[in-house]
Length: 180
Image (cartoon, rainbow, N blue to C red):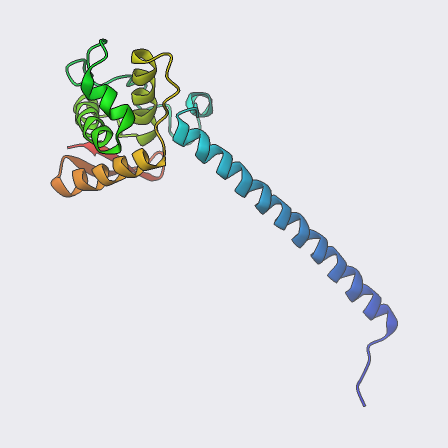
């Protein structure tokens, strides 16, 4: 014989299970929404359309006030192609290999102007995208995931070579990359 709890306890248990299932459903929907948002933001970041300046501008808590407010726009002019349409730049728009070489030159110039400002892939990609738009305003070219992967590989190579170094930002509680 199996012991059965009183019907009142069974009803209480059923009500609790129902509430838990409702909470699980809401959390699952929130997770789905967050994954969709992450996907949309990732696409914007890869296309160079994501502007984080407003997100960071309002932060005063967490120690961000003391950080450098210097804005890096472009690497020095000697590293960027001149405003004329150079064959190197034209080739970079059409060829992944040529673009990798050009991006590597731009990365070195960008790293050279960092000073004490942390390295930021997002800032670099935005600066490169802006420069491309200045040189080719009629072209819809956008840096993409392959370019991001090349930049990521450059970062790891720079860390291994000692031209970039990791530092801990106590105020932001995170690791930063700085020019060495």
